[in-house]
Each structure stands twice: as C-alpha cells, then as structure tokens.
Length: 387
Image 1 (tube, rainbow, N blue to C red):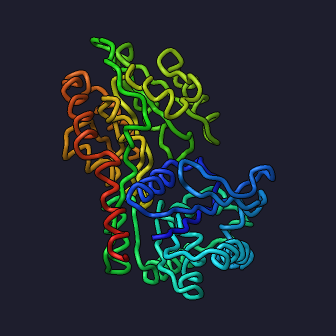
Image 2: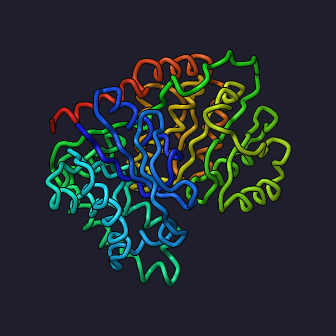
C-alpha cells in the first residue's frame, strides 16, 4: 500500500515515527512523510532511508502554540488540510497515517474527501497531557484550551478512524472504555540495531549508582527521588547522575544544594542518543520518576526499554504502565508516587537485593519480549487488516 504519514513536528527528530516508517517499508509498503520544518532551506522533498519526505514550512506560532487552540480556532486545521490536500491531489495514496491526536481531524477530512483509509496513531494520552502542561494554566491557555473539548474530540476521532494504534495495553484499555473497538498497541521499545551493543558493567560492590536520563520538569518527579536520597542515613552507598535539561532544572539543582546532596547528585550534561547510550552500562539502576496521572499510567516511556537493553533494573514510581512491567518481571523496585519516604525505603532495600540477577533479567526481557522486532508485529497486523 502507499501510505502518507503526517507529522506536525520536525523530522527525523522522532524515533518512533522513523521506526514505524522503516518497518512498513520493510514489509513492502511505500511510505511518504509530510512533516513541518522551521527552516526555509529544508523545505521540499527528500529521500531519507527510503522514506519519501515532504517538508512544509511552518511558523514558530503554528509549530509551538496553535495546536492548543485548534478546537476553537480553525487556522491550524486549515493549514494542514491545505498541505495534505496538495499532496493528495498530485499523488494517489491508500492510507493517511496521522501521528497523534491534534491532526486527527485532518486525517478524517482526507478519508471523506479522497476515499482513503485513516490510521490514528496515538503517541500520547493527549487530553490528559495537555491538562498537565503549564501553558494551559495561564490566562491565554484557559481561553484557548478546554479539557472537556479535547476529551470529546479524542472520543470522536477514535470512533472515526479505520485503525487506532496506541503505545501500550493500558492506553488501549483506557480508550476501549471510551469506544469499544479493536486497538493495536505498539510499545515504544528499542530497535537494537540502532543502538551500540552493551558493554560489561564495571564492578561497583557496595555502591549503587543511579542514572536518570530525560527531560527535567516538575511532572518528571525527580524532586521525590532527591528528597528520598536525603532521608537515607548512609548516603555514602549512593550516587545519582542526572542527564538532561528542562524548565525545572534550576529548581532541581537548588533542591540538591538545599538538602546538602551535591556530593552524591551530579549533573554531567546531556547524553546523546543513540551514540552515547552505551554509557548507561556504568550504572546500577535506571530511574523513571514521573508523577502518577492518567497520562503516565497509560504511557510507554522508551527510556525503560533502553535501561533494560543496557542491563539496568529500574527504580520507578507506581505508574500502571511501567509499574506493571517491573512487578511482573522482577526487574526493579516500585515506590509510592509522590512519597519521598517510600522512595527512601525502596532505595535502602536495594542494598539487600541481588542487583546482578535483576540486571540479567532486565537485559533478557528486552532481548526476548520488549524490543522493536516484537512490538512492530502489531503495526504490521494493523495494516494487514485494511489491505
């Protein structure tokens, strides 16, 4: 089949989109990708690893802010309908594959106008993600955004799509409560051929080296892990390296200083993926500390699978999606969300556990179950259903 994927963001910044497109090409499909760019020199067509790219020029306002108001102000949909329409009038496609909820209206419009199948690929629990975002809390955000309107829009688009793809079983279950139908969950697992091979872990007897990689925002919950470390009596056994940046980084660094943890909590900078991912092998445990919410209960953070691949068990808050994996397969410890006290207890338990056995299980779990070669089978099955 000839597939037109539509991504409102720049590419190739999105690993999931790239993996899906390449896998569909490998399965015998022709994949085009219409995406945005903020740089005039990138506008136009390009062949990227066999993906036929069509880049259209966006503006900072359209790219960063307009989608929040798209249910109240039509110009966002108008812009993307024009870009999609131009392509569909010049080339014939079988499927339009929309990446994430905001542009679902454009996918349904194309389905009706051009008679093609509409695939909705939900990367996020969008109404709940927007409801957590700081930019929906200000005066302008409250005028332009409505949680109820986004929930209604999500339910409507789920019902109108020919195929709905999610990132985990928990998201599929949540959506099935809204609209009972078939869902295909394609986890955000690691494509092992894109990452450097793991290296042997250094011996760190008696020392627990914690690693956090990712954005630093309030909702990522690092403050609870840091406060938990402050409650531990013998801190000499622990260290935490935080790789990443974000709007809340200043507050996290101030918290480290306030609690006197600068000797054990460090900020080495930014870890480049996938080239530098092998550096994970130097650590004992990966951290996923997100505050619990509907969004995080029903998500599939790719970091957990990267940790597993490099032999790291994990310390996680009790979000359903990751907590269920950790408990079922005994590949880490789970602490109560928003509880530094319980986080401290779980950290202290680590010295009594066999982390080497956990590390072996985590790596094996990635090799045998949570990797892209397994996950992509759901994507291929989805497309087989509409041939």
